[in-house]
Length: 366
Image (tube, rainbow, N blue to C red; front, side):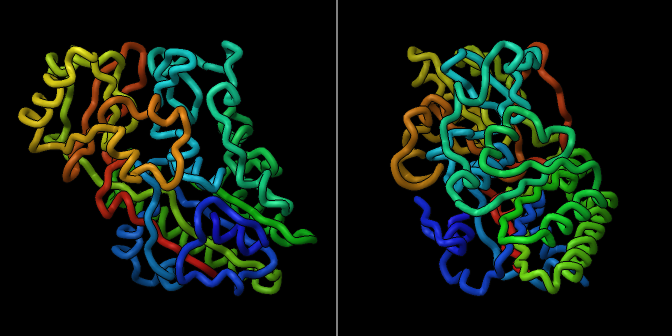
């Protein structure tokens, strides 16, 4: 995002990518974010792939590599170190609730927070990328959530364009790119991620959808050939497939669960633990002995200091949102707990960990 801003003459907190010549960018830039398109997945299915042919290299996602953290980074131009949306489930100390931050509901019971007169402005204060770009900007989002609290707050400064399906997605990208004047277009597509979650990254439907996307982007590039447009394609994260024997369920570890003061937050591959002050030593011992085969345990403060969440000065709310300890799962293990009224999802594809499959995303330029 810093490289894109540089191409429009702006400056960012974070440095542009090294060895990435933005001087060759055209007047218009279309950024297509394909949720779940990991670099390892792309290389595995590179045969006859238009996207792979135009892939410059792999780059890293943010930590943790999950949609809430990475999509917010795309929309702000800063890392979780500054924007503080650190996973799908975020503990909001301001209101004493563990939230599912993108749909903006409580984890327990899925109560809509905006129905209680709570807004994103109450928990989030980063400026958006579009507000600071100084160039007409457009953001394409699904009709399912284009007017949600998250979308409208993180889309400030851009005109939000809703779309209905894959054909409409590419039709509206093309129409917007062909309009007069210099512009920046951000277009987010989530179907590949949804299929990978439900069926795994190697299911027939997942791969078929990737091929369809690959073809559609090739056709888009041809249609924009004479419009002075650069198309950049990347992703928020990749995924790994978990197996049934790789689930660590806290119902089988009641002693550990009793040491927590709130449910697990973050994602199933990287979770944040809020531990009773009188149980910190017990907690460390339990995880490092009973769970050492499945995960690594870190003090969250240490991860902040080591730059896991980003560079430079951390936001004052970051410590509140990553708990006392962070558990990062090994191999393709996940960890989960159970909260009354919370939605139960038996996902096969998972992300949020630090494997190469999850962390590396492609940098594709056309």
